Image (cartoon, rainbow, N blue to C red):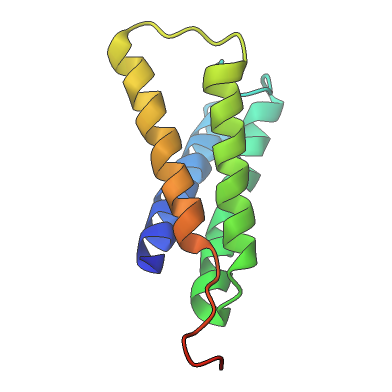
Length: 124
């Protein structure tokens, strides 16, 4: 199931990177993501560099088999999402938005668990 953590992390990283790029290129548009602890203009840079860090983590985990960077990145995404959605003052507009946040956090937690390095059965 390691492919799940790599694919999921890559999709989240590409989304964050794209959102950061669009936010920075739009200039005058104001990006408000109330579930994140950062405000404009810092949120655009956090999204941009967070997406880059996620893509780097996936590449290193896939190419060089260094899984701990991917574990750290997925754990950071889970921590920020869980805090932002459920422990901060963020308010949900509807029940479906609440369940979307629950599913996002659960799928991110699953990506963290599946990214965790395992010992081989033969000890090599």
